[in-house]
Length: 255
Ligand SMILES: *[C@@H]1O[C@H](CO)[C@@H](O)[C@H](O)[C@H]1NC(C)=O
Image (cartoon, rainbow, N blue to C red; front, side, top):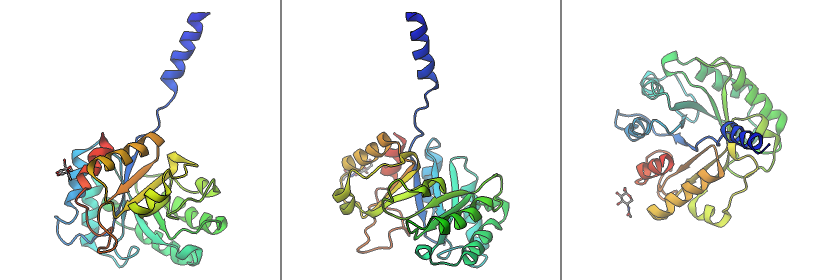
């Protein structure tokens, strides 16, 4: 009897999955002028092969016109197994016509296989418009992406949307995108679906130790992915360059 219970407990411990490790979601909105522009990302990806990088590419607030220079830079990122690439599409808080959204998605999906993306990051997501966002995300899911059976979908309301049915539409939802000061005001952030939630903190002003403890809290909550940068919104375009804390952040995620 005791042995049976012990075996059952052991079987449970073996089967019960630990939650997936928190990855890094990076809004890569800089233009790859030279090979150096994206080098900090390339270095992080190769130095930490156990960290999953979700990279949002964004040539021109969307796919823009065909740009072979841009696509070649994306192809270099795509060669790494720990990288998943999604294309930036804005949705004007649900007001953007479906055919325009569809056109952006199909443009990304038409990129050469070598620079092929996995799906779409929908910016300016408005909560409470399920049929609109179901239509947008259905296109992203069902459009053929190289090497995938279904498109990867990230929605960005940038704030908590509660226990929304949007969680059935997306792989990840960004439920915080704001400054570190706002993060401090709001923490602890609501965790309705941690394994599908992503947090983006910019204008970070804490110490290395604080950075490590914020990352540690995210890992403990089991959130899907995060991005923290000390690039400050008061002076800079926060997603067009890497923060001075970039490698420290990546190291913390890896730890
Ligand atoms: C934070 O850590 C990095 C990397 O270890 C180091 O170069 C930097 O000096 C540290 N910053 C502070 C303020 O200690």
